[in-house]
Image (cartoon, rainbow, N blue to C red):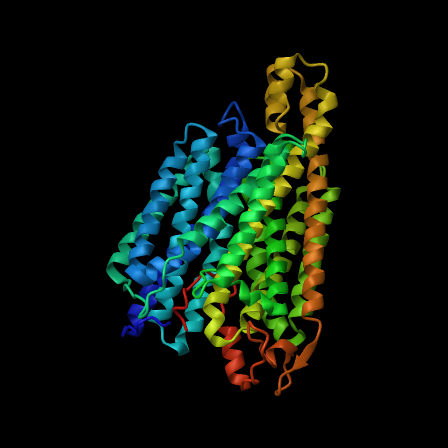
Length: 554
């Protein structure tokens, strides 16, 4: 399937790309800006008094619906025009931002965040499809790289903008920053962006959408519920987990048997494609959990302002941008296994370094570890994304890109669900002895989280209880960081094993053996392609997060 070619001159191509990059920055700002406001939202005095489970859902609902709505958005763009769906996605994102800003309770915030995820999902694959239709092959790789670079800009801007807004206004202001950005993007789209459609329209996949969304939601619900009640034998805990796993298995079987699957599980027959995607899911699993507890560590346990917290996260964001380019260059010489696998090992070591963080650890160490970890993350993500797409035949790259992006979002959903649960349960175990002498009402009010404990300590004029809350949280953070380190380590081992064999290009550059002979999803081997074509394949794959182009670039 291909998008009808559009005859657009070079100056307009640049304007189209500028508009799409601007819209993409909006998505990435919102992935990090909420984290700065979580401490305020959790505080019963300045926010909604949200429990850890509700905060997990506020973060996870965005990633959940973003992941599962990607395929539907791509198919709708094929049928009705990608600009049309892009505009609807921006409108949905803006409307949900207004709802989130003035949400009266945690449930409203969770629902609004989920709707924002749907809007983001409608924006990503349609942007990729428009780039594929607007730019000729010789200019397409550069356009995709520029569009992908927006992720680094948005991730860096999110904490800084969030810090300024939370310090000077209320927590809901972090969502209102989206409104002027949405308005500017809509004006640019209306004046410059074309509306390509697929020459042959894909069929919608409502059954797949329903099964995947329900399965992930049930699994996440069970894991988060476990954090609220540590009794795993209760059916509200294990029941949703079992149901979620069953629905995901059913979804996989349904997609496997479909003639036009929105999520093609047959691609996982390729060992390197499978290993690379699982490793990326492990990385995003760990990253999401770290961002969750890191904000509470800085603002809660250490008492830093929102802006100072955003500045503390800045070295990590800059490291990701630095590592992306560095990793891509090193992988061409030394292979994906050594560079990406080694990078993920460094990420695991950085998580272990969190075990030495305390409430009075010099902040420079937090920033230094963040810079090292961020650089290693960039060095892992960029070459791995390129490699897992490059091992597929040219006519399967669109589907492979969609699967790749979805798997990473699923890793984020599971990361916030499971690591958030580890954080909450460990904290309650550690703080429980300090709450035994409190009246029953005060004990129940203080138990859910460190923020609740500090609020009760303030009301009772018990600074010693606030100190115990900080100590218990730091101990819980150490357990959570160790769990994230273990998952990242396993992902690194998987990458090293899958890409351990390194070949050589005919002209002397290092390359993975999988690039010498690309595997079909069914297991057959393709004939080696000329060096120039293989190089073009890898360079045409964006180094940041990619959405589904719905096959539009084929």
